[in-house]
Length: 387
Image 1: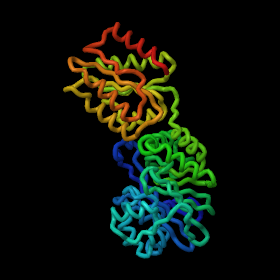
Image 2: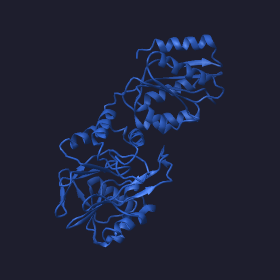
Image 3: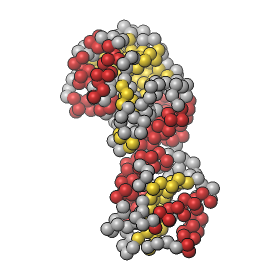
Image 4: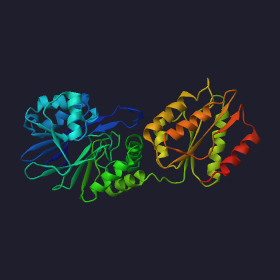
């Protein structure tokens, strides 16, 4: 339960959730971190709290630095409960602490925990702790209306909230201590499944950060950036451009392998044209991992056979999920086999369009089992696409 120093007088006092495997819609195979930070100056400030079940862990770390009742301010950068869940207990343990949050944050916290006299700040507002200053940068819809960043100019330290985060539990607190391949995989997955719907807001936040000098970026989840700050900023800039490389994801489910045969042929046809392709059977791959694949792929083909006049439920779940993520700048098409109805491919096409995917070609359907001649015709269709 030791706190981890970031700089003299500034500590990580958060919690590790080693067992978490699902976070509102996507898989978290490496667990999660709920980061809270304590700044000890003439005044003491706690930056965010943790998910409610982990409040004891957080307070054990805080108590090794300062008595909780001595804390003067609680900065709430985000209302979501993995950040704010410990606030009710915190206000009991920190009776003189004043809660500082955004305008929308004050409304959100009141809706969650009742009116406790939250102090709302706006862009450009600051708070003096004595030798250090906290400046507040609202970042609405990155990824809730209430989100904001907190910056300490004297320490060149940005508390970036959900931006630049990763769901990963590990014994290391800094990026140069942890395996960077795993950290970047989880940063990409976090962006794809949390931040992807908000590219304009991401761009606005990146512009707001252009004038800030940062030795450390301390997000609310995952490791703290100090050695690879340029790398994560560049990645966010690239991802928010919505101009992914020419690569393809072919996602499908199948009952008797007919749609699967089509999917394999489509993936091979992309590869033959020099377009790297990933084949994703929805019985084996989670939709959150497919969303992450799509972060680095311009093309998406989705296939389903027809079952009871509908697409398969796994395919419907993927497309519903993608509609929420709204992956702009992608192109795709629907395909599938059928026995007598054949409605699924059309339904897939409609949902692709609803998710913001530009339709490359009319749905591709095949009755019953595709033979060699049918698959050759399918390949010719893919060869004829304008990529």
